[in-house]
Length: 110
Length: 117
Image 1 (cartoon, rainbow over the protein chains, first blue to last red):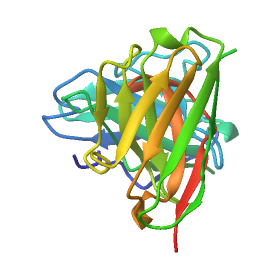
Image 2 (cartoon, rainbow over the protein chains, first blue to last red):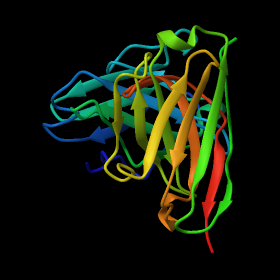
Image 3 (cartoon, each protein chain N blue to C red):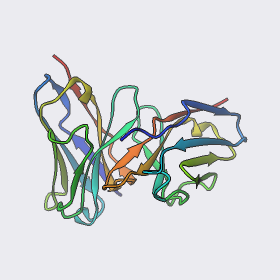
Image 4 (spheres, rainbow over the protein chains, first blue to last red):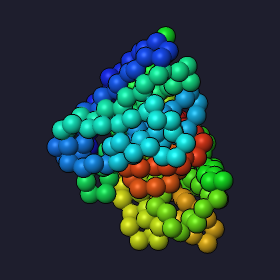
């Protein structure tokens, strides 16, 4: 199972919005509404930010939103803040009770 | 408070074995599926194994199938990963994570496994 494709890096200024894409195939992202997004600060464990494409766990700010179109899922962060600077990973169900992650995107807040 | 604490990592030679543990607290362990996810140094996340709450359903990524074994002891609130025939490319931080394979809502802090001669 190949990893999902994410841009290596994105950047934005405080207060702006950024979108991170996650491209898969008709066997994973395109087939199921089971896409999740994780935030990882350096040296820390990943944190769930979005699940089931667009749902937010309790405690995650509504500045974080998710969507999907065809084989591509997206994470949008609005009103960028300094603490949003981190690595972001998408994850999708890939059938046969397996999951596949994206390669990760480094978000830089300028 | 939900807590997951991994242990058992360390330095091991290629071809060797290691057993990781994940002690959990703050929730009814037997009611939740659990997973192992790893992250090689400077690399991304890789899901490697899943077990249902009862332990009756178990799945592995192709990269570890036949070498790694996931198990759980619900009486001890603990998850395990037995790793055999270790290779250089198994060097990574290993995380235990609660949830289904595609929605992991709580993670431990990870334990580092280094495979090197």
